Amino acid sequence: MSENRRHPVSRRGFLGGAAAVAATTALPATAAHAAAAGRPNILLIVTDDQPKHTEWALPKTVAWLAGQGVKFTNGHVTTPLCAPSRSSVFSGRHAHNHGVRNNKASHALDQSTTVQKYLQQAGYRTGLFGKYLNSWTLADSPPHFEDFALLQPAYVDAQWNVNGTVQTINGYTTTVVKNRTLKFLDKAATDTRPWFAYVTPYASHGPRTPEAKYAGTAVPAWNGRPSVPEADRSDKPAYIRNATGTLADGQAIRAEQLRTLLSVDDAVQAFKDRLQALGQLDNTLVVYVGDNGFSWGDHGWTAKSVPYRPAHEVPFYLSWPAGGLGAGTQDDRIVANIDIAPTILEAAGITPAAPQDGRSLLSSHSRDHLLVEWWKQGAGAGGAPTWSSYVAKDKQYTEYYDLTTDANGTVSGTGQVTFREYYDLVDDPHQLTNKLYQATPAQEQALGIPALAAQLHADRTA
Image (spheres, rainbow, N blue to C red):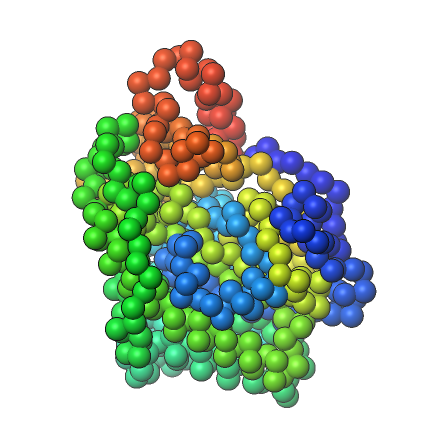
């Protein structure tokens, strides 16, 4: 993948230069910050199906992690689906490299390449609280986590695997995740090892059941955006032309998601309060990200899985005051879930044995575009076909393919390109006009399509 590279900055250095960080003042990171910090604790919070534009439900989270950290305004996932995205978080790799191309293929992940493996091997205390990977057998313990409460996804009275024992725990599962995480944090009072907590509530995944106290909460009115729903979809692929989602559908999904996220906000505040009480707030690296976005009726679509921005853009925050990342800044680099593992490992001073596609966010590295990819599972009708996309700040080019995957993630098909899209994201941020629809060869040349197609091919095979 073509990238713009700057001189590297170590974990004891500044997050990025002025060109990388959209802030009026530089982050106050110096060599002394991280030298004093030593190995940080790691709190990684991954929500489920949370798109951007949901900050209303997270005022305490935003106040902490954006107000006293870094808000990444161009955060993405490299595959807008739960298990592939989470596997990319763990491994720092694209799905075509880690092998978890769909939700049925979770066991394809090489567990020796995961951030939890490296951290545990380096002496970290490791914990998992909440959802792990789709299609993972509940009775199987998640590798490289010594303390865990693994959720069989549900909102109320769910099944859990708690340190090897499958049991029902009554109550709202976000609250259970919160309490189990707090118990794990409390062990820091007697266990001096640095720790890694992977915290992943079910919110805001469907059926989007809110906690009882938030069930009737009024949310701000929302009248859609130009893509909700797009009236003329004649330039879109067939599955989008046939989509039936409405503004009312999008409004209902949005309201339900926001209500479930209110409980996540409570949990995050509880984590902050406990870390402060333990004296560990400053030297804890906190990362918050959604595992994928979600469409609120955009182009008639009410799910994830598509190459349109609401599906692959996600909230993305980072805070580490002792490492100099606590000033409250915005960073406009294109960042992704594949960057999380490299960031954590650099902060912990660990060099991974396996290759990674992502780059540490603690460096000044800045990419000019990102590969986003998706595979269709099975050959049945319906749903999004297999596609890959070149995503930059100013443009997006997508190809659809005659390819499918089976439950093991194995790919089959001719690979023939069946449809293409190109959007000017500066003049058309809502992706209403596919400039490749009925375009002439001369128009394609003017858009730079041959070079984009060549780069996309290189990215897919790298």
